[in-house]
Image: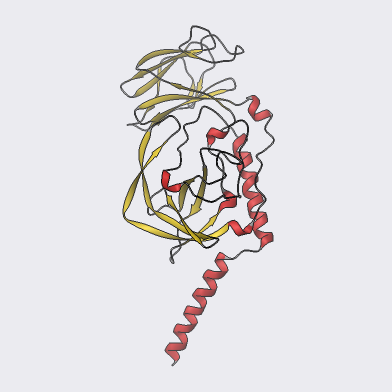
Length: 300
C-alpha cells in the first residue's frame, strides 16, 4: 500500500510539475513576447543585423576589383567611398584581398598586402572593415560571395520597428514532437535557387480548431533548439510571401514542445535584397492563417 501511495505521489508530482511548466499567465506571456520583440528589433539594428546589409557580390575564379568606380568588377553604389578599395581573388576555394587604399582593417590590424581572408577547409573567415563598411565571405553550395554591410546605412537610421499581430496566448500551443528514425534529410531551396539537404530529427504536430497540422523541424537530435521554416495563409498578404521562421526549445522527456507562434519572425530577405533566405519546404506550407508574430515589412 505504501509503495502504491509512493508511486501515486510521484506520478502526481510529475503531472503537476509538467503542467505548471507548460502553463503561463496572460500577463507573463505578454511580458515574454514584448521582451522577445524588443530583442528582435535591437538585433536588426545591430552591427550584425540585416538592415545594414547593402550588397552581395558573387565571386568568379580569379581577380575582381572592388570600389565605387564605374569600371569596378564589384561596384559599390556609393560615390562617398573610393573608386577602388581593393581586389578580391578567388583561387581554388580560397579568397584573398589586396587593399588599394590605406585603412582596410582586419582583426590583426591594417592590411598592407594580399591576405587570405577565407578558407572553409581551414576554417578561416576574416571580416574586413573600411570606414563604415564591413565585409565577409559567405559560401553557398559551391558559390562564394562577398557580404557587404554599411553600419551607417539609411535603412538603420530610418528603421522604426516591425508591426506584429496582437499578442494572443491562444497561439502558444503545446505540440507533440515525433522523431524520425533515422534522421530525415529534407531538401531546402533558397531564394537564389540553390537546394541543399538539411537534417530533420522529426516533426511537430499540433492541433488548431480540431485539425492536426505538422511542421518538419530542422536541426540535430541533441540540439537545445530546433529551427522551423513555415508558410501559412497569411503569407503573401499580411506576412512575407517567402514564409517566416521560428526557434523552439527541443522536446521535453514527454515529447512535448512549446510552439508559440507569437515568436514567428521575418526572414532576412524582408529587410534586404542581398540575403540568401531558405524557403519553406512544401510540407511546411500550412492551410490555416496564423495571425500571430511579425507582419511583413517594407516592399517585400
